Amino acid sequence: MENYDYVIVGAGSAGCVLANKLGEDKKHKILVLEAGPMDYNLMIHIPAGVYKAYRNPKINWNYSTENEPELFDRNVPMPRGKVVGGSSSINSMVYMRGHPLDYDRWQSECGLKDWSYDQCLPYFKEGENSDRGEDEWRGGSGNLGVTKGSFDNPLFDALEEAGRQSGQGYSEDLNGFNPEGIARFDATRKHGRRCSAAGAHLRPALARGNITLLTKAQVMKINISGNSVNGVTFKHKGKLHSVEANKEVILSGGAINSPHLLMLSGIGPSKHLKEHGIDVHVDLPGVGQNLQDHVSVILQYACTKSFPIHKVNQPHRKLATGIRWVFTRKGIATSNIWEAGGLIKSSPNAAYPDIQYHFGPVGLEYNDDKISLLQAFSIHVDQLRPRSRGQVTLKSANPLEKPLMMFNYLQDPEDLAEMVNGFKKARELISQPAFDEFRGVELIPGPQVQSEADIEQFIRDAAETDYHPSCTCAMGNSEMAVVDDQMKVHGVKNLRVVDASVMPQIISGNLNAPTQMIAARAADMILGKTQLSPIKANFAFEN
Image (cartoon, rainbow, N blue to C red):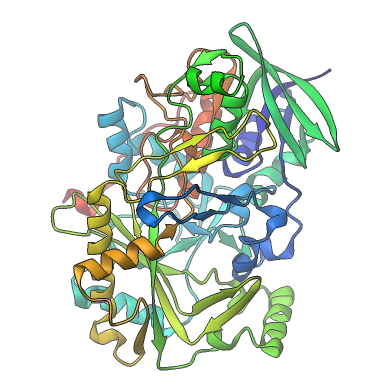
C-alpha cells in the first residue's frame, strides 16, 4: 500500500490551493484524487465558453435537487464541476469576496474568534494578482489572476448610471472600500483566459515533483481505525485501491460531496447512517445539515439597439471570434459576459446588502444543447442571506449513487419577501432614464406581472440556483458543528474538511474567492504556521 503525507480528496477550488501551499516544502509527499478528468476541454479556458462548459455532462456531476416544496415541487438542476479545477473550471468566473460583515458575523454569532474579516483579508490579498494593483484591500502578486470587467458595451455604462439615478449607488470596487452599489465585477481571468484554481495553483504545484494527481479516481470511503483516519479507498480504472495518509486526509469535495463521503464512511447522524446499514464511527448530527444557497430569478428585456454580442452566435461570426481568441486572446470570447452587477439592500431595514445583481448584455435561450443569443439584456436577482435551510442525505450506502439534496428554497416567508423586494428593485433600476434608449419590452416575466401575488407566483415558478451550495460541514463548537475552527472533524483524528461546506453561514456573494481564502488559511494551520497578521482596512460603511 502506497503512503503519502497528505491525501487531498478533490482537485477543486480548495484542493488546488491546498496542494500548492502544502507542497511548497518538497519533503511533503501529496496525493490529490479527482473524480473527473483533466481540464483539457477548450470551453473551460475560453471565458465566453462558460455557457457550454457548465452544462457539459463530461465535466459535471449533474446534480439535481429533490422536489422543492416552495417551488411548486420542481427539481432544480445543480451543476458542480467534476474536472480538475472543480467548479472554478465551469463557473462564471465572478471574483467576489462577500461583505466584510459576513466574516465578522462568523466571529460574533458562530463563536469563530479567529475568522473576522481583518483576519481573512491578508489571505485574500496573498492569493490575488489583481490588475487594479495592490493597496490596502487588494493583492497584486498572488497566483490567482483577477481582472476588472472591461468589455466595451454601452449597456454596462447604462447600468452604472442607472445605479446612480435610482439611488442604489455606485461602487468602483465591491471588493474594496465600498462593498455596496452597482459596479463592474472582477473575474478570475488572466491574459484573456479563465484563471481556474487548477491554472493558478495546481499546475505550479505539480511542477515541483512531490505531488501526484490522479484523475477519474472516485473516493469510496475514508479508512478509519479506532478514532483515527489512516487513508482512503478509491476506484480507478474499474479497480479499488487503498492509500495511507501519514499525516492527514483532507476532504475538499465541496458542500455536496464532502458530507456525502463522511456519511458513507460512518461519520454523520447515527440514526440516518444505521438506516442505510452503515457502521457509525462518529455520531455527528450536523453532517449534511445547514445546507444554504443563493436562490435566483432572471428578468430579461428586449434591447432596442443591436450590439456585436447579440450576433456572435452566427456561424461566421462565431468562427471569427474563436480565431481571434486563439491567436490574440482578445475580443468578445475573453468576456465572461456577467461583467457587471451590484450588491444592494432589499429594504432600508437591511443591515447591509442582501441582494446581488448579475447583469448580462445579451439574452440566452437554451434548447437542449443549442444556445440561442437574443437581442436582449438580462439581470439576475439573487438573495444573499437566506434563512431557509436544507440538507444533503444518503440515498443509499452505494458510493456511486448520488446523494439526495433538498435546499428548501423560500421555506422561510422572509426569504420570499426579500426576493419580491429585490425583484422590484431590479425593475426600478432598469426603468431609469439611463436605459431609455436601450429598453424594449420586458420579456421575462413580462409587464402583466404586477401585483404582489403575481410576483410571488413568478418567483416560485422561475426561481433557480446561483450555484452556491455551502455550509453542510459547518465550523464551530455547537452540537451541529462538524469541524472546529481549524477545520478538524470533531471526534476523529487526522481528518479535515476544507471547502465551502465549512462555512457556518453563507457569504453574501459568489463563493469561489472565499473558498480559496479558506483553503489558504487551512494550509497554514495544517503546517503549524503562524497565521498572517490581520489587516484593518477602511470601509465606507464604517464612516
